[in-house]
Amino acid sequence: MLAVVITILIALALSETAEGVPGLSNVSRGLTGLVVSPATIEKDLGRFLWFVETDLGAITVSNPSYEPMWVKLDLCRLSHDALGVLETQDEPARGSDAVRLKPRTFTLPPGGRATVRASVDPAYLTKSGEKGIYASIMVTSRPATTRPAMGVRPVGAVGIPLLVRFGGKPDAKLIITDIQVVETDRHEGRTRVVQVRVRNDGRTHVRASGSVAIGKEEARQHAGGVVLPVALVLPGCERVLEGPWPEGLTSPGTYHVSARLSADGVTVPGAGPSASARVAIDEAEAAAGGSRTRL
Image 1 (cartoon, one colour):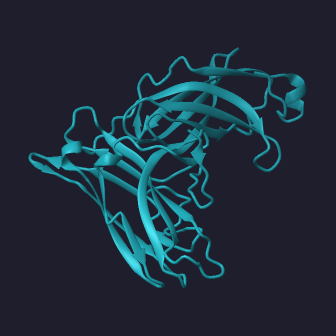
Image 2: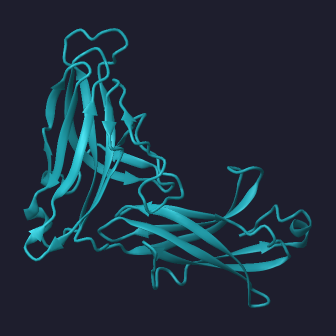
Image 3: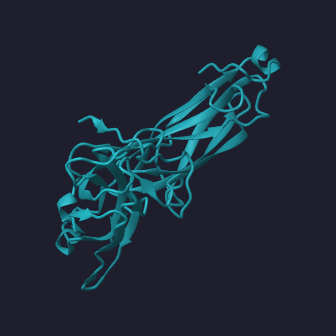
């Protein structure tokens, strides 16, 4: 299925913090002028003996326009690309039938506000093999009148990422699929960076981070290191973690590069010990300050 392209929908920066998903404002604005909050819902649902937590919180939808708006909420599958840009797929999310949104449809008068309660069916939480739900709550709207006022578009949508883990314990399986040393001009000037591509084969989302060890192959000694920033990785998705090549590492020779990962701050054993790359710096490049890379 082709991804639904929505102008206001959500981009993740390469680096993140434990508090949530940076880069998302507290308010998402739809094409019709609807104001929807929060910008994301992330919840670890706990369980103790017979008590099962099911509440996901509330969604507030406001209509600052001069027209009454008809509003509908749906759930679509959520994924992201290698750079972490979230994408809404035009298909139902796994487990979306278990998410309760009350109400799902309603009409908002001009200046009106509605609160939608979100929760999970407790029977779904106890199903074997289910560890989480990952969806985009799509808040779509259109004018409730047949002839909308000037400046009001006929259709709009706001996407709210929904990241839910069951039981509070992550079930992520990070695997390093590739390591590359490349040159990029995304920063000021041309810069060499280390890119580590990771895949989450688990059933829950995880915040991946890590470090890269750089050793000079001829001398068999440690030459430097790179810290990989924290990045969100959804189940079944790949993400590129990137860090700058050490500025002072320009002496001629061949360097061996290997990566180590952490999941939610815990080191991942065996995430790809054989995943490595070699970068060669010749004398001409060293004299130029390390501007050319040969892999």
